[in-house]
Length: 191
Image 1 (cartoon, helix red, strand yellow):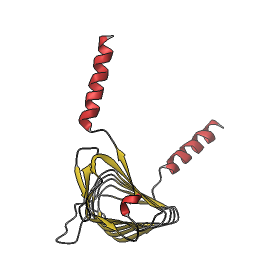
Image 2 (cartoon, one colour; image 1 turned 90 degrees about the vertical axis):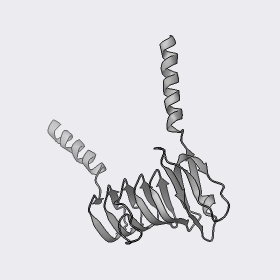
Image 3 (cartoon, helix red, strand yellow; image 1 turned 45 degrees about the vertical axis):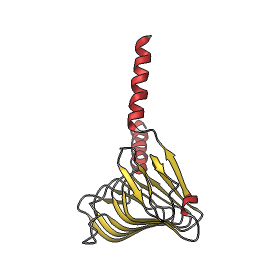
Image 4 (cartoon, helix red, strand yellow; image 1 turned 45 degrees about the horizontal axis):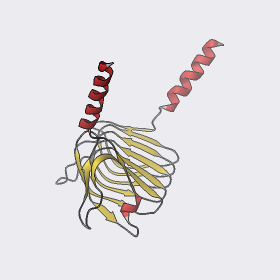
């Protein structure tokens, strides 16, 4: 009986981390469409068109470098819609479009073209600090990711104001975290 329980636990633990699509360094795809709860983990590689729909989820840790002159590398076009969620931690992209009922979480990466939000049911969470989230029309959104890398994102307004759909998650600067840590050590040492 013990063996059956252990095997059951291992089976369910393994299936919780299963990924339908794994794209790694050197992998190339032309068009990849995810739907019906598909999952994606991308740690490198390149593609032209990535679409997420139908409750799918994607996590992009990194891509190959984007070569705009040769129109290769990175991911050129991404669209997220229909209850899907995309998390970007790194990589290089040309254009990202958020469609109806979608969530985009930006923790890092470079967007060379633009970010467009097409619907009021789309949410873009931006995690970083030092945001210039009140630029004049035509100027990019700027700030820093958690690893101190600066970013600049061109926002494209469609029928709605893209800024209304952005949620800024201000994280402390790394130097501030270091000072808090040192302060805690000093307080502890005084006791």
